[in-house]
Length: 355
Image (tube, rainbow, N blue to C red; front, side):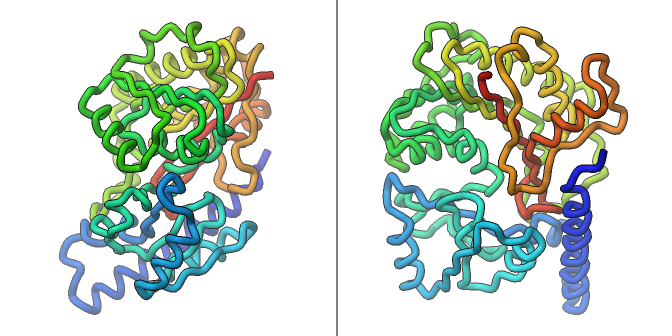
Protein backbone atom coordinates (compact mmCIF):
# COMPACT_ATOMS: atom_id res chain seq x y z
CA UNK A 1 0.00 0.00 0.00
CA UNK A 2 1.57 3.28 -1.12
CA UNK A 3 1.22 6.28 1.16
CA UNK A 4 0.33 9.73 -0.20
CA UNK A 5 3.49 11.31 1.18
CA UNK A 6 5.89 9.23 -0.93
CA UNK A 7 5.73 11.35 -4.10
CA UNK A 8 5.96 14.52 -2.03
CA UNK A 9 9.04 13.24 -0.21
CA UNK A 10 10.75 12.20 -3.43
CA UNK A 11 10.15 15.55 -5.15
CA UNK A 12 11.28 17.54 -2.13
CA UNK A 13 14.43 15.46 -1.65
CA UNK A 14 15.27 15.96 -5.33
CA UNK A 15 14.71 19.69 -4.92
CA UNK A 16 16.98 19.76 -1.89
CA UNK A 17 19.73 17.99 -3.80
CA UNK A 18 19.38 20.54 -6.61
CA UNK A 19 19.80 23.39 -4.14
CA UNK A 20 22.85 21.78 -2.58
CA UNK A 21 24.40 21.19 -6.01
CA UNK A 22 23.76 24.82 -7.01
CA UNK A 23 25.33 26.03 -3.77
CA UNK A 24 28.47 23.94 -4.23
CA UNK A 25 28.78 25.00 -7.89
CA UNK A 26 28.57 28.64 -6.85
CA UNK A 27 31.32 28.16 -4.29
CA UNK A 28 33.50 26.31 -6.76
CA UNK A 29 33.38 29.33 -9.07
CA UNK A 30 34.56 31.44 -6.15
CA UNK A 31 37.27 28.95 -5.23
CA UNK A 32 35.66 28.38 -1.83
CA UNK A 33 35.17 24.61 -1.76
CA UNK A 34 38.31 23.52 0.03
CA UNK A 35 36.44 21.83 2.86
CA UNK A 36 33.01 20.21 2.49
CA UNK A 37 32.35 20.83 6.17
CA UNK A 38 31.84 24.49 5.30
CA UNK A 39 29.00 23.80 2.87
CA UNK A 40 26.52 21.07 3.63
CA UNK A 41 22.88 20.31 4.02
CA UNK A 42 23.03 22.09 7.37
CA UNK A 43 24.06 25.32 5.70
CA UNK A 44 20.85 25.28 3.66
CA UNK A 45 18.59 25.19 6.70
CA UNK A 46 16.91 28.47 7.65
CA UNK A 47 17.04 29.91 11.15
CA UNK A 48 13.94 29.59 13.30
CA UNK A 49 12.88 31.69 16.28
CA UNK A 50 9.78 31.22 18.40
CA UNK A 51 8.00 34.31 19.68
CA UNK A 52 7.40 33.93 23.41
CA UNK A 53 4.00 35.45 24.31
CA UNK A 54 4.87 35.24 28.00
CA UNK A 55 7.14 38.23 27.27
CA UNK A 56 5.64 39.96 24.24
CA UNK A 57 3.00 39.24 21.59
CA UNK A 58 3.71 38.59 17.91
CA UNK A 59 2.55 42.06 16.63
CA UNK A 60 5.06 43.79 18.94
CA UNK A 61 7.89 41.61 17.62
CA UNK A 62 6.92 42.17 14.00
CA UNK A 63 6.77 45.95 14.49
CA UNK A 64 10.22 45.95 16.09
CA UNK A 65 11.69 43.82 13.30
CA UNK A 66 10.21 46.13 10.67
CA UNK A 67 11.72 49.11 12.48
CA UNK A 68 15.07 47.32 12.19
CA UNK A 69 14.65 46.99 8.43
CA UNK A 70 13.13 43.52 8.18
CA UNK A 71 10.39 42.70 5.68
CA UNK A 72 7.90 40.23 7.17
CA UNK A 73 5.48 38.08 5.20
CA UNK A 74 2.89 35.61 6.49
CA UNK A 75 2.80 32.31 4.60
CA UNK A 76 -0.64 30.79 3.99
CA UNK A 77 -1.65 27.90 6.24
CA UNK A 78 -2.31 25.51 3.36
CA UNK A 79 0.65 26.47 1.20
CA UNK A 80 1.77 23.55 -1.05
CA UNK A 81 4.90 21.87 0.38
CA UNK A 82 7.06 22.44 -2.70
CA UNK A 83 6.13 26.14 -2.90
CA UNK A 84 6.90 26.48 0.82
CA UNK A 85 10.34 24.96 0.34
CA UNK A 86 11.15 27.15 -2.65
CA UNK A 87 10.21 30.31 -0.77
CA UNK A 88 12.15 29.33 2.34
CA UNK A 89 15.20 28.22 0.35
CA UNK A 90 15.31 31.57 -1.47
CA UNK A 91 14.85 33.79 1.59
CA UNK A 92 16.97 36.89 1.17
CA UNK A 93 18.72 38.91 3.89
CA UNK A 94 16.43 41.09 6.01
CA UNK A 95 13.37 39.14 4.92
CA UNK A 96 11.52 36.67 7.12
CA UNK A 97 8.34 34.61 7.09
CA UNK A 98 5.71 33.77 9.66
CA UNK A 99 5.62 29.98 9.64
CA UNK A 100 2.42 28.45 8.22
CA UNK A 101 2.44 25.41 10.53
CA UNK A 102 3.59 26.46 14.01
CA UNK A 103 1.96 29.44 15.72
CA UNK A 104 4.33 32.28 16.68
CA UNK A 105 7.28 30.82 14.76
CA UNK A 106 9.43 33.00 12.51
CA UNK A 107 11.65 31.81 9.66
CA UNK A 108 14.84 33.77 8.98
CA UNK A 109 17.34 33.37 6.11
CA UNK A 110 20.03 30.74 6.49
CA UNK A 111 23.12 32.14 8.15
CA UNK A 112 21.19 34.72 10.21
CA UNK A 113 22.84 35.09 13.64
CA UNK A 114 20.32 36.15 16.27
CA UNK A 115 22.17 35.06 19.41
CA UNK A 116 23.01 38.62 20.43
CA UNK A 117 19.69 40.12 19.34
CA UNK A 118 17.99 42.12 22.09
CA UNK A 119 14.77 40.10 21.73
CA UNK A 120 16.66 36.86 22.30
CA UNK A 121 18.45 38.21 25.36
CA UNK A 122 15.11 39.39 26.78
CA UNK A 123 13.46 36.00 26.26
CA UNK A 124 11.03 37.44 23.71
CA UNK A 125 12.50 35.32 20.91
CA UNK A 126 13.59 31.75 21.66
CA UNK A 127 15.93 30.15 19.15
CA UNK A 128 14.37 26.76 18.49
CA UNK A 129 14.32 24.54 15.43
CA UNK A 130 10.90 24.17 13.82
CA UNK A 131 10.78 20.40 14.33
CA UNK A 132 11.51 20.87 18.04
CA UNK A 133 8.40 23.07 18.29
CA UNK A 134 6.09 20.28 17.15
CA UNK A 135 5.92 18.27 20.42
CA UNK A 136 4.45 21.03 22.59
CA UNK A 137 2.39 22.43 19.72
CA UNK A 138 0.78 19.05 19.03
CA UNK A 139 0.31 18.17 22.70
CA UNK A 140 -1.65 21.43 22.90
CA UNK A 141 -2.53 21.54 26.61
CA UNK A 142 -5.21 24.06 27.51
CA UNK A 143 -4.63 26.83 30.10
CA UNK A 144 -5.29 25.45 33.57
CA UNK A 145 -4.05 21.96 32.64
CA UNK A 146 -1.66 19.76 34.60
CA UNK A 147 1.17 18.58 32.36
CA UNK A 148 4.19 16.34 32.80
CA UNK A 149 7.41 16.79 30.82
CA UNK A 150 9.26 13.63 31.76
CA UNK A 151 12.74 14.37 30.32
CA UNK A 152 12.49 18.13 30.28
CA UNK A 153 15.97 19.72 30.22
CA UNK A 154 17.22 22.00 28.79
CA UNK A 155 13.70 23.44 28.63
CA UNK A 156 12.79 24.72 25.18
CA UNK A 157 9.78 22.41 24.91
CA UNK A 158 8.88 23.02 28.56
CA UNK A 159 8.79 26.79 28.13
CA UNK A 160 6.82 26.32 24.92
CA UNK A 161 4.24 24.36 26.93
CA UNK A 162 4.06 27.17 29.49
CA UNK A 163 3.47 29.68 26.68
CA UNK A 164 0.66 27.57 25.19
CA UNK A 165 -0.90 27.33 28.68
CA UNK A 166 -0.56 31.11 29.15
CA UNK A 167 1.19 30.55 32.49
CA UNK A 168 -2.00 29.03 33.86
CA UNK A 169 -1.82 25.50 35.28
CA UNK A 170 1.20 23.43 36.31
CA UNK A 171 4.03 21.65 34.50
CA UNK A 172 5.94 18.92 36.33
CA UNK A 173 9.37 18.94 34.69
CA UNK A 174 11.68 16.03 35.48
CA UNK A 175 15.26 15.41 34.46
CA UNK A 176 17.96 13.31 36.11
CA UNK A 177 20.83 15.57 34.97
CA UNK A 178 21.30 18.35 37.52
CA UNK A 179 23.44 20.52 35.24
CA UNK A 180 20.91 20.38 32.41
CA UNK A 181 18.07 21.01 34.84
CA UNK A 182 19.79 24.22 35.94
CA UNK A 183 19.73 25.29 32.29
CA UNK A 184 15.97 24.65 32.31
CA UNK A 185 15.54 26.82 35.40
CA UNK A 186 17.54 29.65 33.80
CA UNK A 187 15.58 29.35 30.55
CA UNK A 188 12.29 29.32 32.45
CA UNK A 189 13.23 32.49 34.29
CA UNK A 190 14.32 34.25 31.10
CA UNK A 191 11.12 33.17 29.35
CA UNK A 192 8.93 34.25 32.30
CA UNK A 193 7.53 30.70 32.50
CA UNK A 194 6.24 30.65 36.07
CA UNK A 195 4.24 27.39 36.16
CA UNK A 196 7.16 24.97 35.82
CA UNK A 197 7.97 22.81 38.83
CA UNK A 198 11.40 21.38 38.08
CA UNK A 199 12.79 18.36 39.90
CA UNK A 200 16.08 16.51 39.46
CA UNK A 201 14.98 12.89 39.41
CA UNK A 202 14.99 9.82 37.18
CA UNK A 203 11.45 9.65 35.78
CA UNK A 204 11.48 5.85 35.98
CA UNK A 205 11.71 6.21 39.77
CA UNK A 206 8.59 8.40 39.92
CA UNK A 207 5.38 6.91 41.30
CA UNK A 208 3.05 8.07 38.52
CA UNK A 209 -0.04 7.04 40.51
CA UNK A 210 0.51 10.07 42.76
CA UNK A 211 -0.01 12.45 39.82
CA UNK A 212 -3.76 12.05 39.49
CA UNK A 213 -4.29 15.53 38.03
CA UNK A 214 -1.93 15.10 35.06
CA UNK A 215 -3.84 14.76 31.80
CA UNK A 216 -1.07 15.65 29.30
CA UNK A 217 2.46 14.27 29.02
CA UNK A 218 5.42 15.02 26.79
CA UNK A 219 7.96 12.22 26.42
CA UNK A 220 11.14 13.36 24.68
CA UNK A 221 13.59 10.81 26.10
CA UNK A 222 17.36 10.56 25.74
CA UNK A 223 18.18 9.59 22.17
CA UNK A 224 21.08 9.27 19.75
CA UNK A 225 20.58 12.81 18.44
CA UNK A 226 21.20 11.46 14.95
CA UNK A 227 18.73 13.95 13.49
CA UNK A 228 20.57 17.00 14.77
CA UNK A 229 22.33 18.64 11.86
CA UNK A 230 25.29 20.62 13.09
CA UNK A 231 25.77 24.00 11.50
CA UNK A 232 28.76 24.00 9.17
CA UNK A 233 29.32 20.24 9.36
CA UNK A 234 28.72 17.71 6.63
CA UNK A 235 25.58 15.61 7.10
CA UNK A 236 26.66 12.06 6.29
CA UNK A 237 23.57 10.06 5.39
CA UNK A 238 25.70 6.94 4.97
CA UNK A 239 27.21 7.03 8.46
CA UNK A 240 26.57 3.70 10.15
CA UNK A 241 24.98 4.01 13.61
CA UNK A 242 26.27 2.10 16.61
CA UNK A 243 23.72 -0.70 16.68
CA UNK A 244 24.39 -1.69 20.26
CA UNK A 245 23.96 1.86 21.50
CA UNK A 246 20.81 2.41 19.41
CA UNK A 247 19.21 -0.77 20.77
CA UNK A 248 20.09 0.23 24.32
CA UNK A 249 18.53 3.66 23.81
CA UNK A 250 15.40 2.16 22.22
CA UNK A 251 14.96 -0.11 25.22
CA UNK A 252 15.22 2.88 27.59
CA UNK A 253 12.86 4.95 25.43
CA UNK A 254 10.22 2.21 25.45
CA UNK A 255 10.51 1.88 29.24
CA UNK A 256 10.03 5.62 29.73
CA UNK A 257 7.10 5.79 27.30
CA UNK A 258 5.34 2.83 28.93
CA UNK A 259 5.86 4.35 32.38
CA UNK A 260 4.32 7.66 31.27
CA UNK A 261 1.33 5.86 29.76
CA UNK A 262 0.57 4.54 33.25
CA UNK A 263 -0.38 8.02 34.47
CA UNK A 264 -3.88 7.35 35.89
CA UNK A 265 -5.67 10.38 34.40
CA UNK A 266 -3.64 10.75 31.21
CA UNK A 267 -5.66 11.85 28.18
CA UNK A 268 -3.02 12.72 25.59
CA UNK A 269 0.71 12.01 25.22
CA UNK A 270 3.28 13.09 22.64
CA UNK A 271 6.38 10.96 22.09
CA UNK A 272 9.25 12.61 20.23
CA UNK A 273 12.93 12.16 19.44
CA UNK A 274 15.55 14.10 17.52
CA UNK A 275 16.69 10.82 15.99
CA UNK A 276 16.35 9.46 12.46
CA UNK A 277 16.90 5.85 13.54
CA UNK A 278 13.90 3.58 13.00
CA UNK A 279 14.56 1.59 16.19
CA UNK A 280 14.22 4.73 18.34
CA UNK A 281 11.10 5.90 16.56
CA UNK A 282 8.62 3.57 14.88
CA UNK A 283 10.35 0.62 16.52
CA UNK A 284 9.54 1.99 19.98
CA UNK A 285 5.93 2.67 18.98
CA UNK A 286 5.44 -0.91 17.81
CA UNK A 287 6.94 -2.29 21.02
CA UNK A 288 4.63 -0.16 23.14
CA UNK A 289 1.54 -1.04 21.11
CA UNK A 290 2.37 -4.72 21.56
CA UNK A 291 1.71 -4.22 25.28
CA UNK A 292 -1.91 -5.36 25.64
CA UNK A 293 -2.48 -3.32 28.79
CA UNK A 294 -1.50 -0.16 26.90
CA UNK A 295 -3.22 -0.92 23.58
CA UNK A 296 -6.45 -1.67 25.45
CA UNK A 297 -6.44 1.87 26.87
CA UNK A 298 -4.72 4.04 24.24
CA UNK A 299 -4.78 4.53 20.49
CA UNK A 300 -2.28 6.14 18.17
CA UNK A 301 -3.83 9.19 16.51
CA UNK A 302 -2.86 10.99 13.33
CA UNK A 303 -0.17 13.57 14.04
CA UNK A 304 -0.87 16.78 12.12
CA UNK A 305 -2.67 15.77 8.91
CA UNK A 306 -1.35 18.63 6.78
CA UNK A 307 2.27 17.52 7.30
CA UNK A 308 3.05 15.16 4.43
CA UNK A 309 6.27 13.60 5.74
CA UNK A 310 5.09 10.51 7.62
CA UNK A 311 6.60 7.56 9.46
CA UNK A 312 8.07 4.61 7.61
CA UNK A 313 8.45 0.85 7.82
CA UNK A 314 11.83 -0.72 8.28
CA UNK A 315 12.83 -2.64 5.12
CA UNK A 316 13.25 -5.77 7.22
CA UNK A 317 9.99 -5.27 9.14
CA UNK A 318 8.59 -8.55 10.42
CA UNK A 319 6.08 -8.57 13.26
CA UNK A 320 4.02 -11.46 14.59
CA UNK A 321 1.29 -9.17 15.95
CA UNK A 322 0.84 -6.56 13.20
CA UNK A 323 0.27 -7.38 9.55
CA UNK A 324 2.10 -5.25 7.02
CA UNK A 325 -1.15 -3.40 6.22
CA UNK A 326 -1.80 -2.66 9.92
CA UNK A 327 1.82 -1.62 10.38
CA UNK A 328 1.65 0.78 7.42
CA UNK A 329 -1.45 2.37 8.91
CA UNK A 330 0.36 2.82 12.23
CA UNK A 331 3.45 4.49 10.75
CA UNK A 332 1.28 6.71 8.53
CA UNK A 333 -0.06 8.29 11.73
CA UNK A 334 3.45 9.23 12.85
CA UNK A 335 5.24 12.41 11.78
CA UNK A 336 8.80 12.69 10.58
CA UNK A 337 10.88 15.73 9.70
CA UNK A 338 14.26 15.94 8.01
CA UNK A 339 16.66 18.49 6.55
CA UNK A 340 16.35 16.99 3.06
CA UNK A 341 12.58 17.15 2.92
CA UNK A 342 11.41 19.74 5.45
CA UNK A 343 14.33 22.16 6.06
CA UNK A 344 14.46 21.16 9.75
CA UNK A 345 16.51 18.90 11.96
CA UNK A 346 15.62 15.22 11.84
CA UNK A 347 12.69 14.53 14.15
CA UNK A 348 9.98 11.98 14.93
CA UNK A 349 6.60 12.39 16.66
CA UNK A 350 3.79 10.03 17.65
CA UNK A 351 0.63 10.90 19.60
CA UNK A 352 -1.30 8.63 21.96
CA UNK A 353 -4.81 9.34 23.22
CA UNK A 354 -6.88 7.47 25.73
CA UNK A 355 -9.79 5.58 24.20
